[in-house]
Each structure stands twice: as structure tokens, then as C-alpha cells.
Length: 63
Ligand code: SF4
Image (cartoon, rainbow, N blue to C red; front, top):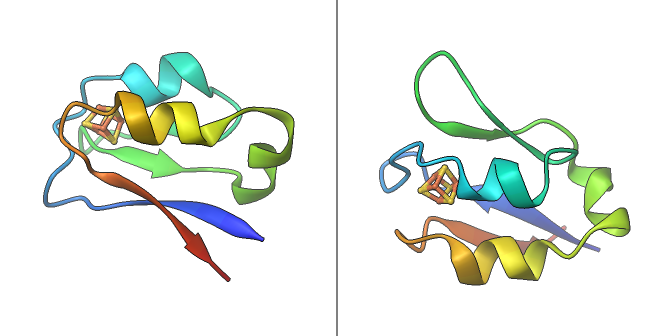
């Protein structure tokens, strides 16, 4: 199964991924997007979040 991973060095906390997949992504107090539920990707299309991230900070990685 592929799980989304955020590169914190690239993430600007714009919130796009959280808006698309709130089950999976949450902007933390550090202003970065965090993956709060890897399994949540089954019920949404995280590829859209990957493609929509303006910084290219999200990747899908095989476990
Ligand atoms: S879309 Fe990309 S830059 Fe924006 S909060 Fe999500 S991971 Fe960070």
C-alpha cells in the first residue's frame, strides 16, 4: 500500500492538501502539513493532493 509522506523542508503549510484530504492531512502548530491517518488514503484520492501541492512536497511511498 502506498502512503503519503510530506517533506517538511518543502511544505509551506498552504493548506491545499488538508482541504482536499482532511482525513489524511492536518496543518500542525509548526505550520507544516502532517499525515494524521495514512489509512485514510483508501477513502480519498491522495494522488490529487500530490498533484495539487504547489511545492511538490507530498510523495506516495510504498510501505
Ligand atoms: S499542499 Fe503541500 S505545501 Fe501545501 S500544506 Fe500540503 S504539503 Fe504543505
